[in-house]
Length: 578
Image 1 (spheres, rainbow, N blue to C red):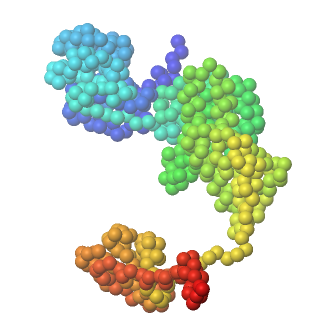
Image 2: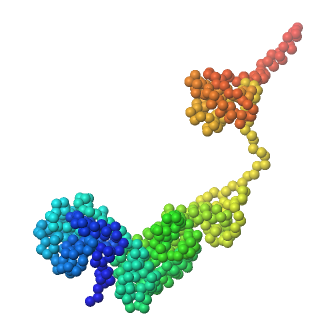
Image 3: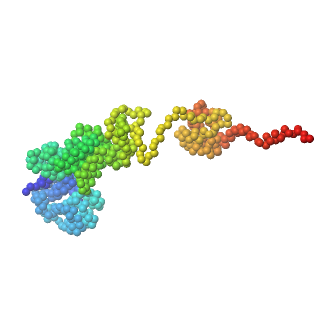
């Protein structure tokens, strides 16, 4: 009867476990020194060796002839535990035995001494599936177990295990196995099984396994199928994947914003039996590698998934900016998560491809950031578009006015490199356009030839000028100490008068005078007055109200009509009436 590769090649000793030396060496030393704990908690992702190490440890503690902490796998105890004939070593599935009654029965049975071996061992897989009452029932025996009892708990979700259980166990974290170690193990297994596995095929399976050796062996078992050679193409055809070359070509079409070409490539891959979810997943992996390479060029190499040559990554990285890659990765992750609930996977994948090829269709914040980054790059390179009158496009609703016109102009019209933007030239987003339906017509620009009137200076003669002070005091911000700004701008406290090249500050109280009559403040005020009026003005601070301005000359008295009448009557004073 055929046996699956991952079962047939399950490690028998601690030395055969791949990629977990930090755990196997510790367990070997504990077994050799007979310093075993009563409970162990193995955590980590799937396929990394948790259950395998638990079974090896169960044989090692009961082995009659242990070898450097590992079981001999030849004594009756090892053979009986291996074939399941010794009932003192029991493996339980907490997913199907998660009730409190099963745990109580286990607890009642555990107090009895083993019949055939030295220690009774319970291996509880997926222990996080136990219910709360079951954990409570297990807690007491974990705290004070009999000397012949050993618990080995395994879980992939450590956060679901209560802290009271964790504190009573020695915890070992199994890490993901490196792709290089998985590939070496696959080549060894393929050589022993006479499977024609190429080195490139082993590397591809190692990347697809995502750190789990069991997944890698299962994929290898799936891809054998009597083929002449298990190479990259055979693995891609068997698993329905697009491949690095196809994925890189699709990414280049997206970078060039070739929507039609990208949709045709997706349709061809779909027609060849490729799963659209796998295609989006490979695009996501490539976008992640490009983003890591662009944002962390020094240390990002160790974080990348691999599978693409340096020339391909460099070529794609030059065409895609970090905001664009972030937008693409966000869209791919969202679309990939939604495919599981989609009623039409192909349509959702095509919508994702369309949004990836034109970030203007992405209304999210990441899409807006990508568009702004594209405009900044175009402006930095000095690229403008020659847009004729017939080629102007109205602003698309929901988009930025300037951004829409620049994007449409660059996309639809031939671009001309004119060098950096010169002063006086109108940018492409400020060109003339017809008014929108709800926008009033723009008035023509008026050109005035006469020069702008200069700011009148304060009078140098006469009774002085205080009309300049409010505007002058408002311009002192940043030029004088900030502590005196509230006084200078308060007309009830300070009034400034300019007369004969001298600036006099009339203040309301001695306290205000003490705040302003300081050398540092007077010097700054003199510098500001010199910058505005010229010369070397003097500044003084006086307590009291400023003197009133000189009275204006009286107006000429208006002529009274009564005076004219009296004058007219005076000419008859010397007339005698006879």
